[in-house]
Image (cartoon, rainbow, N blue to C red; front, side):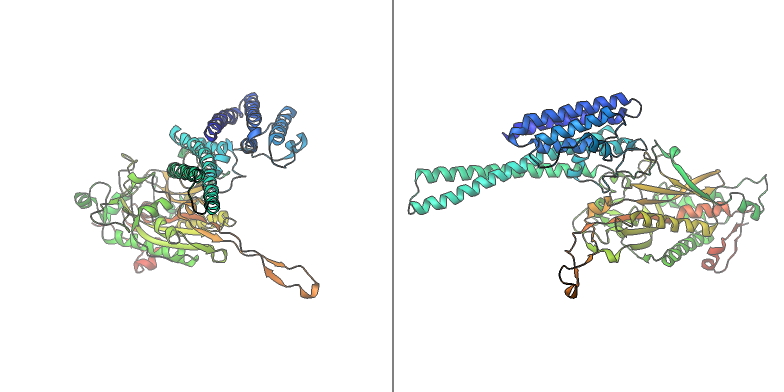
Length: 594
């Protein structure tokens, strides 16, 4: 009975996973726990093989166990090696496959993903996961979720996906068997009808009833499969990306890793005549002195966290935007003017939904929908720029694709109550120049570093001191596998503040939006006589998921904050950075209003 075997499978798999989880979490400090976990896992898998070998199921269970064990770190002891060898021998001998049982020497020499930054390496799992790859690599996935400091509910979601996928495999077999019975019965009915010259005998009625019963069974199973698929997709959408192995382990932004630092925080003050007694003002006070700050009227008409800029300050903001766009264009980015309203599907593609719906501004359906779907204001131009190719198959020769766009961004900031309430640091509406790249898997990391470097050059052109931080596992964004933050120096508070986040999402977003590319076709010589040898195209490769990279180049509002604070003078004026003067009609100083 398929259901009975399915329940046995769940019990065995859960026991195996518990053992694996125990060894994975405690191996760092107590190696003996690691070995006990391996021993328990090996015993469980061996038991599974013995119980089900007569039904031909041992191969599936044994290979699942081998996959799980293969992603665990290994000690150098001979006991550990022989233990793995025993597990491989047991499962291989019970399996119906023709693979050669692993020897102790083979087990010792084969490479196992090591613990990297307190989690299992994803070296053997380079892409984002679907239900099948998650099930096959559940220890790795759980290790990365724990590294992200994920909630217990998120860990449970991953385990549920593995359980549902196991049930799905059993149900697919059950459905196919029912369909086969129905087809066989239908063929038998035709033959019996010919033999009986069209007379419907009792035998024919019995076979028809069996075919109908099998058809009903297939339909019921198909309905359950649809429910499982829906549940798995919803659970998968709630899981964040796996982490790049270079991401350091940490709880929050206090444990981010400083990669580099640029500029001298005392250089501009020395040029501008700051004295030790001078206390630099906050950017909103500087803007008010220039006659360009009007928050009261903005709050009166729009509510908290809205600001109105006027006169020279508004012009300076526009100059910053133009400078960033021109710089991006000079680096090969194609400028885009995208829609500011996007659908639910678009936001699901870039993974803002379903998790971050409370941070979005939603448009009421009575006002507007996007092709019948819920409509939202964009939280960043990353959403429309990346979705420009959703559902498409690109050619590798066309990659990388680089886009830039200046747009207003709208964020409800639901989780930031009481934080950064003053000035322009955290507002519901702000301008940002967004940089987006669509790349191949092979060039993904290189393009991520290029994009980050382009953002750095924006700050260097303005001569704003900054530091480059690699985000730790507990601070990296939901969709990112690796992220750099650029933090600009703010003299009013004497601290560095985030001004850009540059993220490589791998194929995490592309998988969600169905964005793929077809790898290049390799040219190879045909066989035959040397005179007749000609280059011919190899078999056309299958499309694979693109990698998407995004970053601010830069957030205009926060850059304005940095310019106002770093370029203020003791007299209350603001010196215009040299690279911005062409965009300000040659103006060099913004004078304090008397």
